[in-house]
Structure formats: C-alpha cells, structure tokens
Length: 328
Image (cartoon, rainbow, N blue to C red):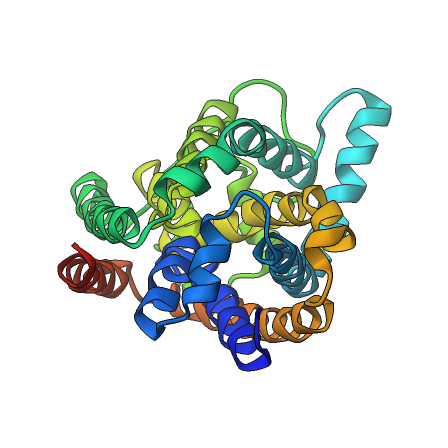
C-alpha cells in the first residue's frame, strides 16, 4: 500500500516533472523502480489499482496550480471565447488564443481516451521509459538546433502575429517581429522579461490553426512514458517561430485543460474501490504536487526568458542511459 513518504515524494516528482520538459510519466516509472518500491511498481502495471486513484489527485492538483498561476489569462480567454460564440466571430486575440488552445487540445484528448490505458500497460516499464527519455532528450536538442538554423539575426517571427490589442482585422494578418528588436514609438525594445501577459497573448493569438493542430498532435506523444508533454510542445512552438518564453507559455496553457480533463475523467477511480485506503495519501500527495507545480511554472516562466532547452536535453539523455544500463 502507498505510504505517506511515498505519496509526498511522488507528488513532488509529478509537480516538477510535469512542467519541466523531462517527462513526469517517465520519472514516475523509473524512480520507484530505482527506490525499490515494489508495491508501487506493481500497482502502476496493474489494470486496476490504488495508483489510478492516486494519479487523479496529482493531475487535478497540477492543473489547479496552473489555473491559479494563469488565472488572469484564463479569465480573459474564457470571457472572449464565450463572446465569440455569442457574436459568431472572433474579434480579439484572447478569443483567437482560446480557440487555438481548443484545437490543439483535441488530438491529445482523443488519443488519451483511445490509447492511454494501452500505452500505460505496454510501455510504462523502466526499459521503455529509459529509451523514450533518451528520445526526449534528442528531440529537445534537435528542436534547439532547428530553431537556431531558422533564426535570422536576433528576430523571431510568427506568421500573422497581431501588432496591438483589440479587434483582429479581417483577412491574413501581417508578419511581425515578436521577440526582440526596435519597437515602434521607442528607440530601444523592452527585454523579453518585461513584456506583459497581454502582449504575449497577442503574439500567441497570431499562431495559425494549422500550427496549433501540429502542436496538439505533438502533445499526443506524451502518452509514451519518457516523452515530455511540455518539452515536445515547446519544441513544436520553437520550430514554428516562437521564442522560448512564448513557447513555454503556450505549452503551459495547453497543458492545463488536458491535465485537468485527465484527472476529472479518472475521478471514478478515486471515488470507487481503487481509492479505498489511500484517500488521505492522495490528499497529501496532491498538496505536494500542487505546491511543486506552482513553484515550477513560476521558475520556468522566468528561466525561459534567457535560457534554452539544452540542459534538460542533457539531463534526459544521461538519466535515460543510466536507467537503460541499470534495468536492461
């Protein structure tokens, strides 16, 4: 049965690794095996177990932390999406961003409903997790390399990026610099870390629906233990022209509904027999996960103003090789 120390440790691991681009599922598979937690390992592989109930709490706690951190953004998005439904047209960048997130969520949602259980049973082993963790590291490094190749000077461009707050003009939107360089009306651009959330929403609202769909499809690979949801969606964003901060923001916003939906979908496991005897441990682990997730997203939004994915790529490859040698 799950102990309180195990619940806290697994909660902290979930809260950190779900947002850091290093795969929460991969770590939840590898680390219990390394720690010698045989009961937890057996529960992970079982079709029905207390571990399913435990995952409900961790997912809901992580999504709640993201909702709290981005609460102002979500209020604007939900408000403007509802207005766009009422008016039958998209007039603001926030409404457009909301619909982009909806489009990007659909592929992962469908894949999760159809294949999550199968992938968890078949691929959630230390050996597979180690292999996919190495793949994840290679993908992160490749994404950085492709972004550098695609960059021209010190500018990042997104097709159709809006240039101001308010109604979006009809027809294709003009290309425009989004990250650095001179800003109209001022001799020197503000630093990336000084840009407001509203400005970020304007830039992200300029992503096309095909791009959002590509990022959403990329997110489905996170069903494989070792492939990071945030990592692969960030790479997709970087390759399509986003800078690191905007790619991270879109990734975290995109993760919120899918993580929350996964928790709500599995709620019967927590309420039913699988939750018997572990509900207090679920509560303790969920609190740990929520705190860790909030601190992680707060750190990463600052980290990606100036840093890259390369340190995480190295970490994933090193841990993956070590785990593969250990369990092969």
